[in-house]
Length: 418
Image (cartoon, rainbow, N blue to C red; front, side, top):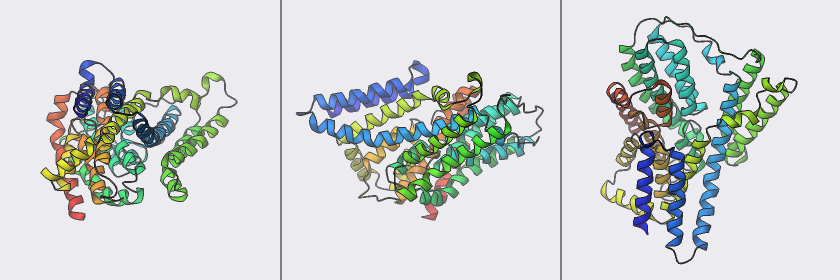
């Protein structure tokens, strides 16, 4: 049974990694893999009731992550639908490409920590398409945005799905992860940024054009932007005060913003209304379903005891937790970091490594920033790849080495600090 489940999982994993080649959405593959793993598990077991009980327990934990993502994605999409991000972009006035690169990178780094690395990468790559006309400049900026978005997401409980998973799972706390990973994550961005800025030079010859919708007033735009950001920042505060799961905080923030936008548009014609009901149709639902499928699949590996055996084998053969973390971070550049971290959470328990243990912190850093080494190694990279048509081998030649240097530099800073 275990062999069959492993083979199914590995085949599913390979098909997910080859999504662009086989032209099958990774959400479909992940869902099929997850259900099939549990089907094999229950069919090869003597009784089904204990298996079903295990599945229900896992779904309870998984649903917290999915509801959180759904709420956060809706808030971000609502801000974007109101052109709220113009609040940031209109304040960028420099004509110097090198100065612009530093400004864009730092905005991406901090914005990613508040929103998430995927959304931030989409927003910032879209921005540079308006600011720059030279194709090579766009590619270089996009490469740096990928690195900055992943570095910014690593030190925030809301910046990367994997960090959110560790936060919701109780492996890390919000205040501690910010305190411990901010400097290493910043270093992992600044080192390649410095290398990029040596090459990027010249002046911008293209003006940023505003694409704001005429029926959205500046008041509405600013109000939705700031309320949305406050709603996202409020989540860890809500958790600290109430001790309720983070998805409850994101839902109350969404409901407040939902109410405000309904009141803003209540007297407008239907075509000019931007409502949450409309925004929900634009949410990246396949990504939500992908997370569901892959987390269900990993839960099957955990329930069968396969992850425990893998953890034991890694501990016996490698031994050093820092090397294990660094290796897993490198692996996340090849395969998606979500199932990797889900597997790690199943492999190592909180009794052995309690909340805020350095192992969990280092895993958050490595899984978050390691994906920058290859363009397919993170959601931010895949998104930028699609928008700017970044070639895999161009990224490998022009960006990967610098991203790796930044990854190692940040890891070194963290190791020296613990």
